[in-house]
Image (cartoon, rainbow, N blue to C red; front, side):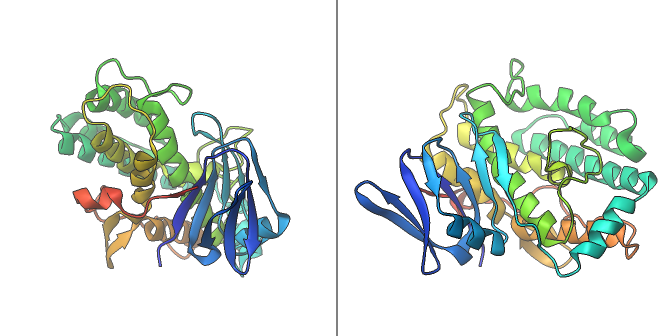
Amino acid sequence: MLGQIVEISNPGQRLILTRGFLEIRTEEGVAGKVPLDDIEAIIAATPALTYSNQLLAALAERGAPVVICSRRFAPIAMLLPLSGHHAQGERFEAQARAKRPLKKRAWAQLVRAKIRAQAAVLEVVGNETKRLKRLADNVRSGDSENVEAQAAQYYWPRLFGKTFRRDRKADGINTLLNYGYTVLRAATARSVVGAGLHPSLGLHHKSGGDALRLADDLMEPFRPTVDLFVWEIVGDQRDPELTIERKRRLAGVLHADFSTDHGASPLSNVLSQLARSLADLYLGRSRKLVLPVAPLPLLEDENLADGGPAGL
């Protein structure tokens, strides 16, 4: 069963564990219940919130991350389990020993996939894609020429207009992107831990304060899918609000089916396969990452409304 993203956005709530359920309580009583086994991640989007330690431990046992967000829905903290795989120690060691050329090749594969996905998004919205396709073909080991940034400069104004600038601290479209990326990052971090890898040991991202560098690396090819969801949601609006309905649709990105070598598979499963393939790469069992056959999911209009968060 595909999990739910549970967002807690109302102040003054308390989250506790009750007989295998996440129970949300307010001063008036029980506001809702969700089975723990159905939870993909929890997004805490209000400062006035309390948790029981028993609940946090139960979520960690199931590998479900708890994401703490800022006012603009950018993630500022995340709770993840310490142990996620029976061979975790062996995989940590292989990850830490990985040579620079291996990591540079893997990063180049991720950047190419991201740029090809950006080109596919522009094709969907009716814009020229030749330049992005050429840029993707020009990515070298480690993306030494920073082709990723060149692609971004071309991509953003053609997707959201000439005046748009990607800024995590800005409102409007940026807030919707923040929320979608938060959902994607949480699912990617869960997949990384589930594959027995350490989320802080990245391939490319090197921010000293970023404890999820590997998740940030692996989510890159799927950011354009979030972008496309946002484009579909906002239409012609230039300053859209992040409503409950829009949060629900953005969280549905994890249920979007991608074409893979084994048939259609939801993004949450695609992320798990990608993380496992990276573990195999570190262990010398494979030579490349496993990514979807096509850069974008098999999108249908109704898919955008599926699998959204239980907003409580």
